[in-house]
Image 1 (cartoon, rainbow, N blue to C red):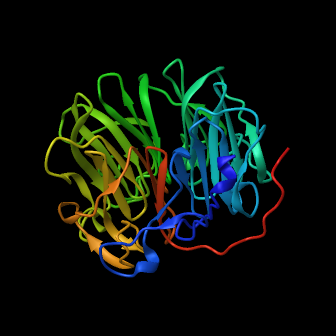
Image 2 (cartoon, rainbow, N blue to C red; image 1 turned 45 degrees about the vertical axis):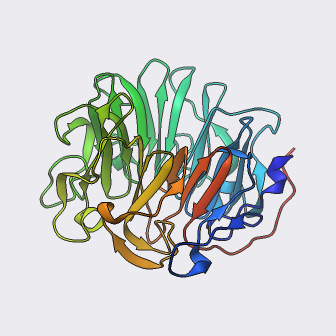
Length: 367
């Protein structure tokens, strides 16, 4: 099976079995790596692990922590005969959707797996959520959220990230059509294109907060430029959205000045890109990636090659992000101290980049 043809390693820079892709400049050892063709539909990178769905919908993970142990090959998770509809990875845990139900695995310090703090889990654990079917799920730093078929959003995990108290919470307010879970805050888009966010707000990534911290317990309407959003991404210290219509628009962000402008005060809303042809955005701790014309472009304060161009340390403004990587889907680790991993997939081909990791012993596959 194609799972076993791709030898994945958590840090993305040593994806065994991937083909090294030379960068346009800088240190060739930090180039992004490309997987064999026709294998993946989506990859979800964490800090020390990667999870993904192949083109048939089978789920596998590799790496440490949330990979189900220390594995250097992609190991199928749960029942290896069943297919999944979604997967998302935070720094140390992951969640997925199987038959409409939500399952999570990895670290469980704050109850980010099932709503109750406890032992870590090396296999998917069913989350006892209030309705039967969910369409989107997100794994953050120490919390998780899912979008229900009834347009409600439910979150669980760290109390400061899910409504001020521990446990499983249906977020109050409006109904939603899409969801993004960041390191310590989350965002969703309503059916009119309004952006709503809640959770950590130390860098005014949700609303003005001087001085921080300034936790937001319930969803509040987030302002960018006053126009509807078609996509949103909650990262580590910033929130970015595609503002436009008909599936494309401009990239606008708010949050950490360190990330968005290279320094200075936190930003209340700044247009990051020129043109109205951007279709997707993904925010990490130090990197923002956005997609247009079948390519992903990344910028920000980079460590370990976070924008995929092979340069180990730099700051790249959005207008200077000229190194495009073929992409149909993109994902960036939503944040964490000193780590930035990113993956894109186009026509089954996967490319990942970020800091290296150490190979670990390979356990037998489940089942």
